[in-house]
Amino acid sequence: MNSIGMAVLIGLVAVFAMLDSRLLGRLNFEQPLITSTIIGIVLGNPAAGLASGATIELMSMGLVQVGAATPPDMVMGGIIATSFAILTGSDPETAVAIAIPIAVLGQLLGVTFRTIIAALGHRADVAIEKGNFREATNYHILWGTILYSTMYFVPVFLAIYLGTDFVQAVVDAIPAWITAGLNFAAKLLTAYGLALLLSMMASKGMMVFFLLGFFACAYLGLDVTGISIFGVLLALILLSIKGSGSAAAAGVDDDYDPLEDEDF
Amino acid sequence: MTDNTTAIQVSPNKRYSQYFWRSWAIQDSWNYERQMNMGFLYGIAPTIDRLYPDENDPEQVAKRKEAYERHMAFYNCTPQTSAFVLGLASSMEEEYARDPENFDPETINAVKTSLMGPLSGIGDSFFQGTIRTIAFGLGTALAMQGSILGPVLAMVISAAFSVPITWYAGKFGYEMGNSFLERLQSGAMEKIMYACGIVGLMAIGGMVATLIGITTPLTFSEGTVVLQDILNGIVPMVLDLGAVMGMYYLIKRNVKTTWMLAICILGGIALSAFGLLA
Image (cartoon, rainbow over all chains, first blue to last red):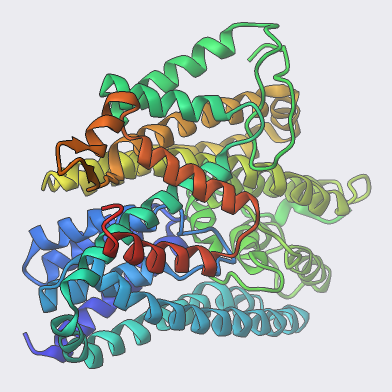
């Protein structure tokens, strides 16, 4: 496959990842574990795609935020990083370090495009005023799709088409201590992602469940499946205990509400 | 009274599948100004078009314009739970078309606005917090062992919740209208959030213990005392817990994302280069 063809294919995977959140209610096809596996299949190396997908998924966990996200766009970053990792034979960790600046640039493009779409909203107001109803909904389903697809296709295509040789040269020049450092930095990024999830989920009185999950896995050797099953059972038990007064409602905010004692 | 014999009828399944697909597509024109406003309009447009189908009747065209304008207002909600609002708002639009004298159309946007906050809260913490964490925690663990089942399982779990919840949210919103709303407000919402919080937090705790893997290569007394072995004897995976709690503290202190990433990458390289952690 020539390099233009490859860059186009990876660009299309990027469009698919973007449309996951635009048209499929964020069904999670956009997650690095999925996009990396698809890129691995597209580039003829599924095992490498799967492995870098797992690494990048852990690094980006919690960083893929909802709506007006400003942290580096790890959906785009993950796609570019996996492609670099497979095309240049580098570590996924190293590839992410190179991909993040590109993802930040991609994010700037995202800000521009979301502003343009706000302007289209005013065109839609005018269209409704004139009675052009189909034109108004087309700004959403047609122009929205086109703009969001372009926003992902162009930077990913350019990064892969123009960047692979450059990235190869950079990867070859990186000394071993930096590679080891990036491998450790990837673990810290995983810790950061999990801490972000924790701060999103934990309200007052709920930290105990986080610690319960941690110690159950650390001491008893449970895996994530096991602890999730125990979590569901524990939630059912606690909900069935009425009037205990010790339970708190979990929320995205920090407010503390005693669990109401009513029929489910 | 508007003549409503003109309203076009459709089968319930057609209606629900429109709520379903158009709720999923609600972010297609997400923007900084009114966010998902055009997305909501796109969702409710077929309902409005069915209520006022006659393009030659000036009264119907005026009603249709009024309804389109109404749904261009600011809106933002998790796509899956937004299907409930779409179903409910559709049934309210139909009610208004049936009885324009006694139904104040302002209540439609009032209901949308009052529901989008709690439904975003519950939707985001359920889908982005609990379900994604568990699905991708499991999927990543499998993928690390080289199994293609990892990504497949992650998607199956995601879809197993997203698909039926979106479908039934739209259906319940339309069928039960306001009565369902009252039931949700009578404490069921807090209970669902509470259960999601427990499962999600326990899964995050489990992931901290199983997926990070920070170790220290430090040894003392010419290599006879290995620090990592001592730590394992006291609290296994304590370095992972320490790293996450340290990050959590910084996040709570509102340290900016850019700084956090710099700490992770530059701090990580430094700690590793000095041989303190790996």
